[in-house]
Length: 289
Image 1 (cartoon, rainbow, N blue to C red):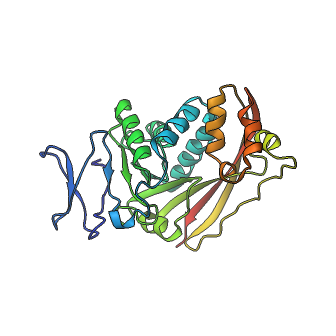
Image 2: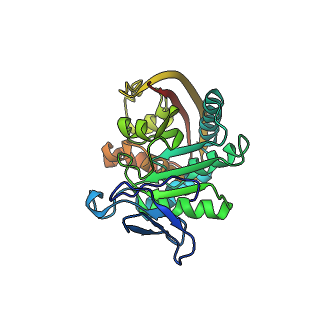
């Protein structure tokens, strides 16, 4: 956690790690103090900003997502994200970069990115934010098991991230809300933003099972007030999911889960194997000057 320039969510003052205290805490000059959980994360989401008693994914959903992602089905996508980040950093000539995962979930992509960044600079750092305490706890536990000293996680809103202005060289935003102004605030002047969105044929095989007349996804190209789109890269793969529980987990990770009739979902649940295209667009933005 020492790599990150934390900001107090109460008063916006810098948070300082208090290494001599047990438990380990972050504290600002005004006395606001935040304990670091035993898993290694810190909860910086103030109660009045939660919006729900337990916002974000619950423990069951975190376990299901972890099982699916650790199965390697989206590894080609993760590899593409990592390669794009390294290329963007090279263009900015960053020596020891810090990259923020805005909407890190259970930490699969963040951990793989951190490992990849070590090939670029051994003093690189990653910080992940998510509303779900269960997801962040799992992400931090994953990072601790890796022995990743420069990998940090906090419970926080993407629209009010508890790090100082200009403290990040880049942001990845994978299927999460886009906080245009907040992303611009935490980025350095030459910082980049990488947004991942589903491409037209994403999960076409699943949609053929769910719907009588499947339709392609709309092409998404976000227009952002504080950023300029500089590059678009498509990543397409074909996956075969052979575990029914993984099929259910994949379905639950999509917006279709919430708007598909029960009888249509049952057709998918009856499948013992799912073969489908997965296709993503990576949208690379630069902070506008």
